[in-house]
Image (cartoon, rainbow, N blue to C red; front, side, top):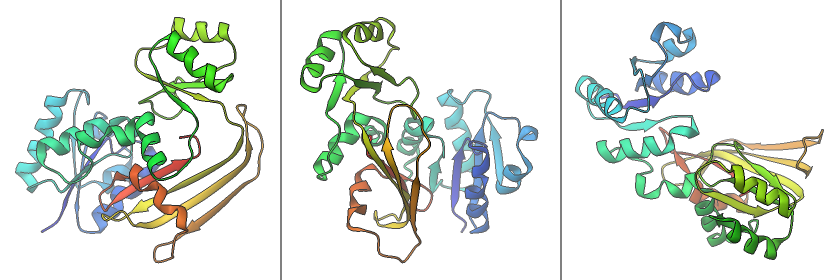
Length: 266
């Protein structure tokens, strides 16, 4: 029996249709759910999907449940529910709860969505992280800065990418930040200058990396600059370096296992 892989927002990012094409070519049903009209999907996305269910509003959770119910009725139990868009992590976990689908559940989502919880896992693994914590008030921020000094970086604890990230260099800048801070918890950290090392890859269902790539960027700074970048890519079957396990706590599920990403900025 073919496995049923439901894909939330299969058209974004636009060049990631190859993931779903390979799901389909592997013999599984690639079942898309999105808000884009079917005729507006690219030919590559349409050809990669077994079927597509359009929702006018993807934030309508009841409608999303009905879409999953439709796929369950038509194809059988959903084996995986996933998206390649970080924005939907919490929604993915909630659907897995409600349909008993393997993968990260709501009880564990904070460890891959909230930067403060990620830092806990990295500390437990013996990985050094920038000093910092979630601050809820100007007074709490000043207590932290008394330990770290300026500058500090303030970023949403549960943000996507670097959206709404700020550098604060002075007391006046700190006051301005809190005067216009967007709602939600903010993580504040000491500012660090140094080399950036990233580690990304895919892990199997037991947490063992089967593919990864490491990237080193020399002497990072706040402002973008031209810099030398070196990469190391290791295919399946090749022994990864001893530091590969530091990523294990931050793994997020995919159809065949997990995708993970680590960075010195955590």
